[in-house]
Image (cartoon, rainbow, N blue to C red):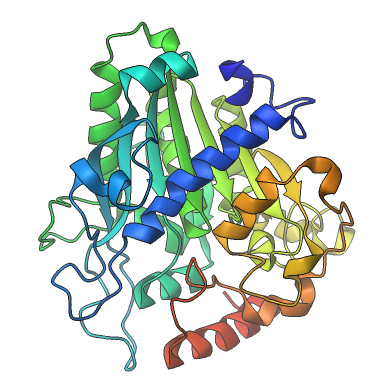
Length: 376
């Protein structure tokens, strides 16, 4: 049932199915590998890059049997203005954001198709945190032949996706976008199987979910989804674009499953007030073009035990654990409650334990204020 798992029927009647949840959790673990392999040691020559070579990265993080071969590492360089407390080497420099992989022959037989995977981590570096604050909408204009000025996305995510660091030491030539388009295109073209037996799966947590959504839209605009179906699995992802972006995303036939902890405030950002649920009100209709709108289908999760720990509600490990928990054992109380903690959003450094720094505390407080007031 791989086509159903990849969303050919928009997951109709499958959201509680154990096969779907197991597969989605598997992709979550492949995203979690990004965090486990990311080097946060300032003294290391690989600081803010991957600690391991491509050939052994999955093995080093305890996923030797994952069934994928990593073919390329991906780097992103957010183009943001530095602030006095930011380390000088952070802004504009390429940092390891994830990897591209392809299923091994054995995994291909198990899955029923050859799977091209792109996996993105969430926010970690100071520049990425500042990029998350850039919540103004701007035209994506990813297809020069058809720029579609009405299709708008969050400027910070677009900066991460399209900015380049030409000084990157680890092979990240070109922008994140350029690296991804080259490698995904190459893997689609190099498949031995018929195109109908190949899938492209884009998975990411938090900011990584936004990048996966942008990449899916980009690939589809360029027509690559005609060679292989494209599916996004987003974990705790924010809104990415406006209503026109969602409409075009749907028109292109891209499938996106948004796994969302109902207590996770990140999934309500940006667009605290102007979003798909509020612009029906008469007083807000003039701002409908500036309304942030989620794409795809939501798979809601809930866990009262994480409410006391604000980091836990957004932690990828929490998401994976909830997906693996039998549905009958999960509490289905949709208490919402995100509005009470808006001032603490923007990301929790992707994983707990990364350690808070003064600029992070300031970003959380300022970000909550400006987002709540709708200033950016």
